[in-house]
Length: 442
Ligand code: VAL
Image (cartoon, rainbow, N blue to C red):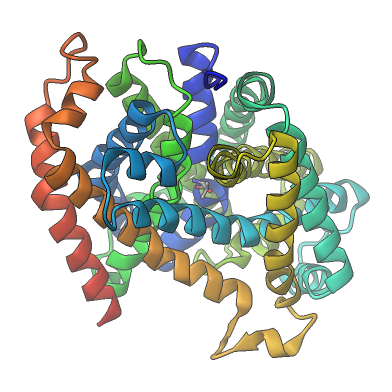
């Protein structure tokens, strides 16, 4: 058997894993969910969940991948028999569902880069921008086309493999993303009237916190960290045995959280500076922000940079989701990489088309008050924490100290919090996640 390809360097791995984590979840979803859920209060919950559950599970998933050097299904099968490999299947399926609607939204960023330059979004009237947005997403042919284009970009990266494909793209794209983000944050917080947005973001309003806020915050934490979707197990499986895992995991979690927090600093002050509504929901990025850019000096340029930023973030994330399925097909079904990429992209597109068409093109794809895309997204908000809960149980009760030995390279690498980590996996994470899930359902 051919030996498994490894990341070329620690930096390459961290950039790829941070590329997976930093995505639409941080830049598109986080600011609007924060806007809808009372600003600072949501921020506190989100940060708490990242710290309590997120970090421990990131370490756990990466370690499971590295220990087995296998895709999620193969990894659980190698470590334990019985029903445990089902967690792997759950992860692969969840990643696949996410990818199916992710390419649709990412496709919107492709269109918006063009719209920004062509002047389609040069209006200070949000009703007019809303018309451009709904006109475009409601046009089935266009939204399917941009989703296909985006998927092709993902395939181009993934088919190149780990080192020459994913790692090379991430090493280039992630630093670019940070530079673009910093430029936009500086622009936003120096706008006149930005202070009110900063206050909204940083001063918690606990009266807006309900059971649903908890579910939203935990779903957001898992989505953002790429947990429960097989991605970190898969990326971990390409990590060399000699790397120090805890440090890499800390860096990935830190970068992901930093980008989400900075995205809040980039968007909320700008929205307030122009007296717009922070609770505009999913349209915050695609309807509200163009109005902001239209009023800002050199707004076309900043607007273009913003949607390019969103595109880059989405690409490195979608690549990791595609790699989950590709790794599964290559390891378990012995497909060549090229074939695995072709098949998974085609099936995923087939599943994504209803999401693309549910935005106004086909009325019957809206049911129960939500579009097909919303249903898919909502389903994953439950599947992700569920996957996390099961992984925590597995790690805490089945693997236990065995995985600690893996994390510490048999005692060579310091992991002073091993005891706390194991305690979190055994008790805190399963009970806490279950509690949040039940509170949300009730
Ligand atoms: N973690 C990414 C994001 O936040 C994806 C892979 C879901 O968008």
